[in-house]
Image 1 (cartoon, rainbow, N blue to C red):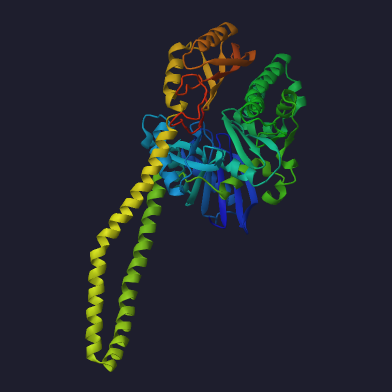
Image 2: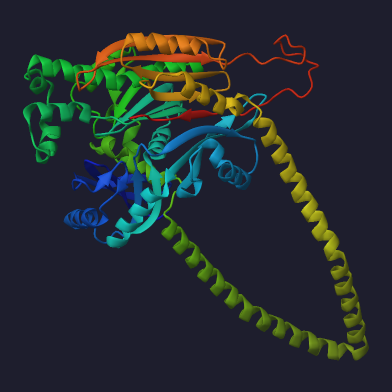
Length: 555
C-alpha cells in the first residue's frame, strides 16, 4: 500500500475525505475534511452522476491543497452489499479463495452471479472438533465499483482499493486491542453498522439502513427547512431545540429514535444467547453518533455503559489524537487491510501492466543468460584444451548420457506431481462434501415454507441462520397479524420449537400501526442411526457441517 493516500467515503448526504499517512507499521490521519454531496449524484452507495460529483470532489481537493495526491481508496456504504459468515476447512489460502468463488452462488442465490464481485475477510479460526477458517464473505454489484472507476478517471486519481465500511470499521476497531466485549455502533446519516468484538476478536456484525437522519429529517420537515440548511442543522441542533417543537412532533421523533435503536439493543440479547457472553460497553462512533436523543435513548434501552469513541484512550495512537477521528474511523480502516473489490476496467489495466513488466523482465533475462553461458563456455574451452582433447570428448559423452537419462525420467516426475496434486484436491473436495450435509442444505425448504405460509403484509427486518436455529426480526401491521404469523410458524415442518420476544406496538411516520417482535426457531433434532435422537459412539459417518450466518437488510 502507498505511503500516502486519499481515503474517500461517498455518502448520499456527506462525503468524507481523509489524508492518510503510513508511519512505520501503522497508519495515522494527517488531515480531514467533508463536504455536502451534490444532490442526486450518489444513491445507495453508487455514484450515478460521475461528472457533477467528480467536479465537486476535485474542487474540494484543491481547496485543501491536496491536488498532488494521486492514490485513492474508496469506502462504500450500501444496502446492496450482502455479507455472510462462512466456515471453510483448514486449507491453504489459495484453496480458500478458490472455494469462496466456486461456491458464491450457494452463499448468495442471485440471478446473475457474474454481475457481482465477491470477496472475503478472515475474521478468526473455528476451534473444537470441527476446525476451520471463519470468513466474512461479501458480495457487491459491479456497477457500484465501476461508478467509482469513472470518478477516479475524471479526477485523475489512481484506485488502490475499494473497501466496504463493514470491513474498514472492523479493521480499525480491532487495532485498538481493547479488552472485554464491546459493541461498536457506527452511525452515519443514513446507515448504521454494529460490530461486536471480544478482546479485539470478531463476534458479529449487523448493518441497518437508517442513521442520524431519523432525527434530522424529522426536525427539518417539521420546520419546512430546505435541503440547503442540512449542514447548518447538523452542527446546531440540540435537544432543547427539539423539545421546543410541538408535542406531537417531539413524540414522533422519540418514537422513531427508539424504533431505530431497537435492533441495536437486540444485539445485546443475541450475544448472550448465541455466544454466552455479556457486553461490557457500547461505544458510539461515526458522523451521526452525536445526533441529539440517540445517546440518551440507547442508555435507557440497555443496562450497559454507553460512551463515545473519542473517550477511549486507546484511540489516540491510531488517529494521532484528532478530535474528529470518530467521524473518519472508517476511512483510516480502509488503509489497513482493504478487501479486494475492484472495478473490471481497473483490474484489467493492472493485469496488463503486470504482464508488460513481466515481459520486460523475461526479455532482459533472455539476453543476459546467453551472454553468461558464452563466457563460461569460453573459459571452459580454454581449460579443456590445456587438459587434452580426450578428456573433453569423455566429458561430452557423459554429459549427453545424463541429459538423455533426465529426459527419460521427466514423464514419471510429471505423473507423480499430478498424482500428489489430485490427491490433495480430492481430500479438500471430500471435506467440502461433508460440510455441505448440514442443516443449511435445507435452507431453501425453510425459505419456501416461509414464502408459502406467511401473510403478504409481513416484513422481515433481518434474519440469521445457524446450525441449530433461525432468528427473525419481524414487522407486521398489527397484533392480530402477529398472532397469525406466530401460529403459522408453530405449524412449520422445518422447526420443532419457536420462541417469541419483544412484541411492541408503534406508529410509523405515515400514521399507520406497526407491530415488531423477534422469533427464535429451533430446527428438529437430528436422528442417529438408532433413531432415538441420541448420538451413538458406534454410529458410522457422523454428519459434520459448516456453520454459517446470513445477514439480510429489508427496507
